Length: 368
Image 1: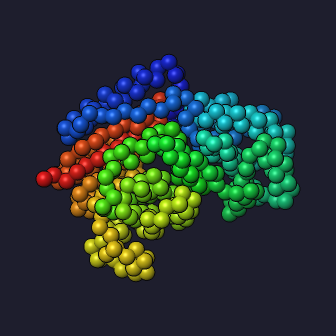
Image 2: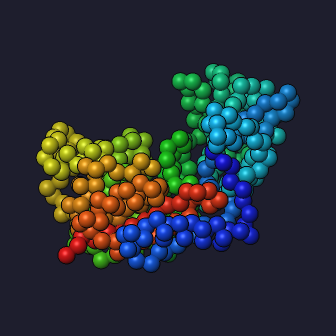
Image 3: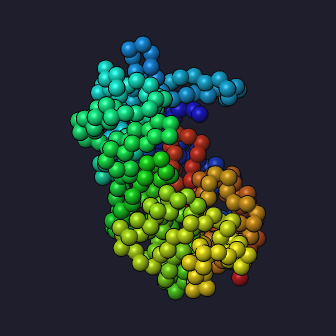
């Protein structure tokens, strides 16, 4: 992994390079004009994890720079600050080290620290150890929690000690509406909160006027899009395989007063089988699929994209909203999807400035 070099003065230049690459790589699909959503040029990540490096009495945060010619060769890079991370994380980094450097109970065999913060100021810090944590550690950790004004979780092999709670509450303003999200430690959430707001606003915009139809959402995670889009549809059925994410999505629907959406625990492949009548059972029965009239599907798959069978399933819907964290697999999937659908909206979200990565959004509508 290359550690990003942050230079705000060059931000527009690096974003333009991404824009040109996406336009070039997708030109064969003849998409409409590309909408580009910039990120803050620094301090944009609300969650980060670091190794804790011990050198004698010294203690510092570290990441590893991988040699591109020899992936097994890694160089330890010391980090006294991290401009990629939120300002809150940068504020906490030295304060946390100062508090634990001379405290043997907190420092001993501590090898990793994970930060989860929000735009609203909450901070959850996970301390991960190569030893079992006892009551003495817990007492010191509680004192540290109080001193820094944070929440702490201790982790070790087969052990997880939650001192206050295992989640933060994020509040995002999207199109002048305030949405709240429970974000659970050690589960996926969008790392760049400002870009997340742009993605939710864009998805709302491209699905306006859909109140007569229903939305099916695959890979819904903690309900990030589900919460924001529910008001655009008659009903929403969202699916996700992770138990933690499903539980969090249901909590988020309730927290936002949404009563026209349901979340089912099921993989995209299983859901495809259920729609075809090839899979039964209690979970399928509870979904009451016959009660829906799906007009739109939203999919936000992992970096590997969709397999051929899933692409064929998407082709059954009038509209497809595809959120992609990997333009390469998105392009591969569009080779299939554009046989039946045409691209009506196209967006680039700069989720990870100063890296090669970017996120894309595509609205496809069935061809006449």
